Image (tube, rainbow, N blue to C red; front, side):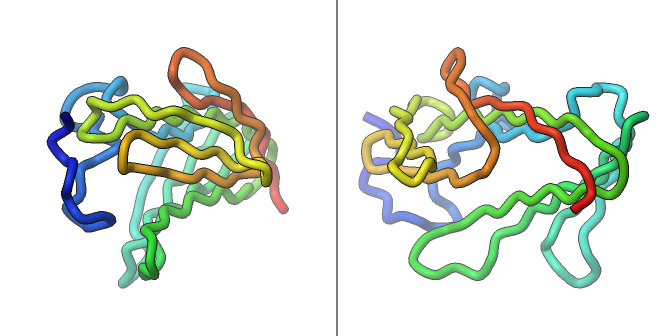
Length: 149
């Protein structure tokens, strides 16, 4: 049995599904980065907000990854948007969901609307993205190109 069973959800202190900081990537993370590993990276919070902006600059172009959690309704939402600044940047997405602090691998299925549904016991995540993703080695991955507009 998981350590989190019976805990009301969602809560700020609910069991993590991205626990790589406590272990390694196999314990859950959501990586979005350029394929070019030599990209220059800078991060900042927008003034007086909890909106994190990460700039990636490569020889081919530049993009900004914008991360935030909007005020909550009945569910918790994580929004990750990528904005092309100039040129073209090939990006890589690697989603490793592991519920219960990295100990539970979810069952992932594609929904009728194209979204992905990941379920493990009482835990569930829905991912909606225009990026074509595929399952590989218990990860959800996909590469895509970002340009201005």
